Amino acid sequence: MSSAKTSDSPSVIRPTSSVDLDGLSLEQALIDFEVANARVLDLTRRLVEQHGEIVRLRSEVEEARLQLHVQHAAHVEAATALGELRASRAYQAARALGIAKSRLRR
Image (cartoon, rainbow, N blue to C red):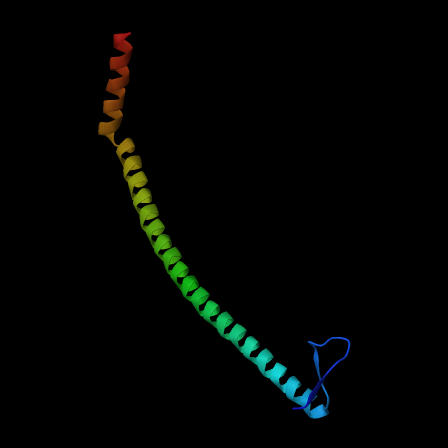
């Protein structure tokens, strides 16, 4: 490649032919390609990592939903049992005795 130094700035080298310009353009295009390729690889890596995180979080959410369902079922069962207990004659008799006992103490 032939190049000439300009008189106004000794450190700037300017190409003197279209071949030099084509070479510089090609070199810059290769550099730009490498930078873009590195960005694509980085973004792909980050995308794969985020996908893994999404899968992990979805699994945690599903596990929490199952636990909530089990706890809700246990709560409903306990509430039903409590309702049945309060409806029983033994509970009503014990409650009436407790009320009567507290009134007698006054």
